[in-house]
Image 1 (cartoon, rainbow, N blue to C red):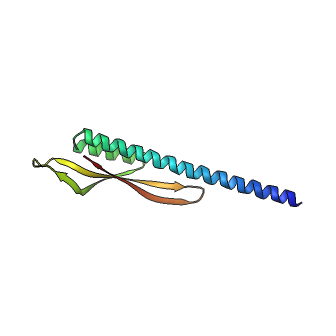
Image 2 (cartoon, rainbow, N blue to C red):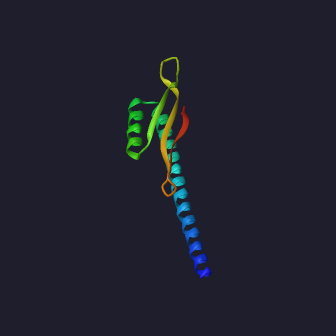
Image 3 (cartoon, rainbow, N blue to C red):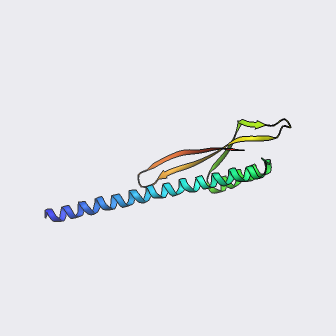
Length: 113
């Protein structure tokens, strides 16, 4: 009888570990995808020379992907002609491990130059 209980407890702990690790790996993959998206947005903004139409298109793409893209207005540096040369790009995304019920909002920040 004790062997049966030990076996079921062992199986329960093993399944608990498997589902927890699967949730953590899924959250890490989501965070990595958000980092990749953020890097591509920063590169796109830099390549467009800070065009407002491109920034708006990137915000739309971010909303469609489930992210929130923000441009910190206080961080914009302009040259003598009034054109932006530096701005902080912030991407907010949800980090969640469903099995554990962990949900938090994370931010990725970088400067477009």
